[in-house]
Image (cartoon, rainbow, N blue to C red; front, side, top):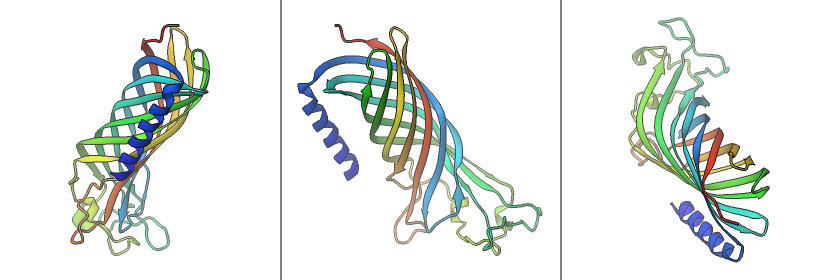
Amino acid sequence: MKYIYLFLFSAFSLYASAQVGEHRNNFSLGVNGGYTLSSVHFTPQVTQGYLTGPTAGISFRYVCEKYFKTICSIYGEVNFNTMGWKEDILDVNDNPVINAQTGIAERYSRKMRYIQVPIMAHLAWGREEKGWNFFFHGGPQFGFFQKETTSANYDFEQRNIDDRANKIVEQETTPVDNKFDYGIVGGIGVEYSMPRVGHLLVEARYYYGLGNIYPDSSADTFGSSNFQNIQFKVSYLFDIIKTKK
């Protein structure tokens, strides 16, 4: 939480210092969509790759100031997002582990659906009314667990643990314990603005979860089980309130 407090303090300081700039009162609303590459940082380690899943939602932005050449905004979203992990079940020679019952390589993945609410400072440089600008944004993100689904091509009682290089398997049958997720998100992108049409944003983001999905006491299996995500998104915003000139 100290990182969230530090960000909020920095954002407030930035806003306060921006009052010497050119005032703006622009509010935009729109939609967004894209894909998430998700994994979970487990301690002890669980060998895995990225799980891909869709994300979509609504976006809103309030432009409050232009400070020298920096366009200062608050940017937020309410999204439906699919996260989780996909295991790389390998032996010590990095070969796929074959299940004795099915005769095929074992595969496992877990999908978890969240409602996510990022609230970010949005700083842009470039064209404000028409044309391109480059932007950075970052801030806290909160997630609310909805449901989960598990995909495995073997019975858990008959999995081939003996041949696995990574013998940690508790995560495969343990349901999500902590329903509330929180962390820090940041991203970069480009925006193209069109008068009386709207704003098109293309961006890449990285999310680092500060909360764990499983209990993390000394008596529990995992010391950490937090999300790490990469997102690629496209957003479209149209102006609701515009500063009069």
